[in-house]
Image (cartoon, rainbow, N blue to C red):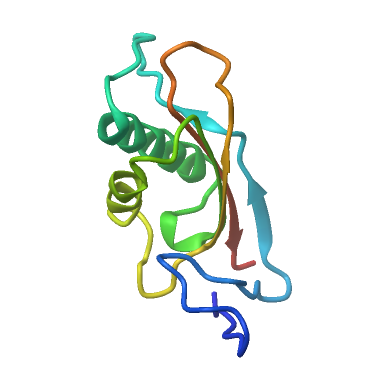
Length: 128
């Protein structure tokens, strides 16, 4: 998906201001994914949780016929913003950093289960 360049906003750190979705594409909206393993455990720390969130999100995308290359928007919910460098490093293992998706990040007081640090939802556009 092509991204748009804007004359006003400053250069961005790993996300696009906007992504253009081709006409006729099939849009896939995921629910937020968290770092709960198949056995119900929550890994410790930002890196382990973010990696599991992205693996879980990748499985959801695949089940809908999409890949990480199709992702046009990520929405993040984090309980703290002090370790964003780690979160970005893990994200960059999954997304195409040459044309990253648009992204929003919201700091929240907490997620639905104690110990969870991050939740991510995605929008993907799959060519029809």
